[in-house]
Image 1 (tube, rainbow, N blue to C red):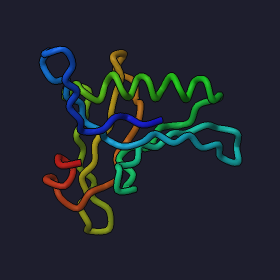
Image 2 (cartoon, rainbow, N blue to C red):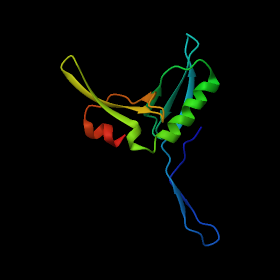
Image 3 (cartoon, rainbow, N blue to C red):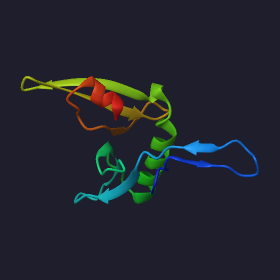
Image 4 (spheres, one colour):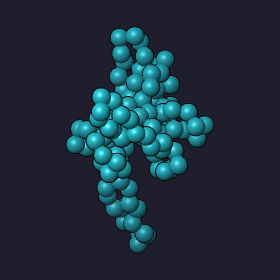
Length: 116
């Protein structure tokens, strides 16, 4: 399921339509029967990993929610972690209902997190 790609589309002297591709969503089934999705960049880096869903249909609804929420900066909860004297930075994407949708990987700096 592609998210999109950088492109312009001009038709009949209308304004160009621009959209940006973040990457592609992938759905996985784990050994416990839960469905998960990841969002991978066009370079293959994982940008988001979801929580578990009981069905493929629910997982697809989670992807729809992620797509809708991803454009709203207020839906990102920025976090910092510290384990074994090592700091890390990540974010959680939440839906309109303020519930967890997905989490980013842990980055070594705030600027890496913000650039994801």
